[in-house]
Length: 292
Ligand code: ATR
Image 1 (cartoon, protein in one colour):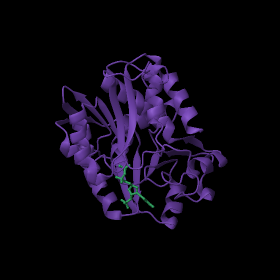
Image 2: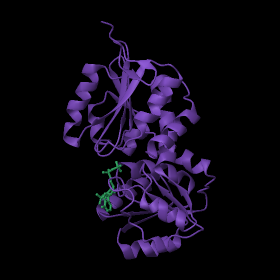
Image 3: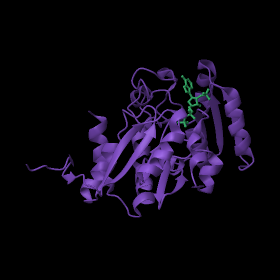
Image 4: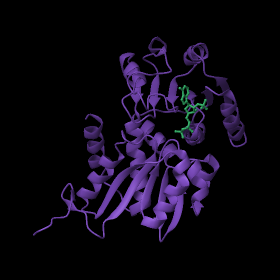
């Protein structure tokens, strides 16, 4: 009897196939498998990328698994980005400072952590011709993604307001940032009133909370009436969210989480494979996966 190997696209999975993947919770909506597997197919690489649902309390076991199975590379997403750090052999300085890792490489069983959230976000902004210099940016959230983004935003923007549901998390982030940047950093508690007031003063809004991740089109922190045509609305959640739809309806310039994911994806691929991936293949794969 002839047994044919299972296929991912046209590539057979063999005993030599390299395994990469994403850990986080939830991951079932992730378009990363589609994005990376499209590149592997295009470049005829003997590799496959899969999603592993790993809640925070299973991160230690998952990283032991990465070593045991010799998984070649990982992305890390909510809620594991900070937790994962203590199980790695090495972490690049900026990721250590940000206290969040979203890419892990495995070179001869030595696991190294990186953070491509900030650079990915800045590339997504630049691609849509958004200039932060001279601007006041309102950042919603103070978690791992907010930490990563705020560092890069402050390199360019004039003022940053960090607004968060839990004020003390925003204060802690601002404290770290003030040690590094001599710029105006404002902290406030996220309420519908404070948000309304702050939106009047800012021209760039970035949502780095997880609101929209679970229930994309039905939840948003922002009242659509507070969005304006002269604003940039950037939602890092990799879904088409209510905030993105509301931003489009208001005539604002919108940048969605897929734009950021694409640029992060390029950076992650370079870390693992030491080569530039085909950008258009990744973009098309994201488009197709996100519309199904
Ligand atoms: P990530 O690593 O992606 O940033 P995280 O570290 O878990 O994920 O951070 C999630 C962010 O979303 C936090 O700023 C969180 O606010 P708290 O600091 O108050 O927890 C924010 N967040 C999550 N759910 C939210 C909600 N329903 N309303 C407002 N903010 C929310």
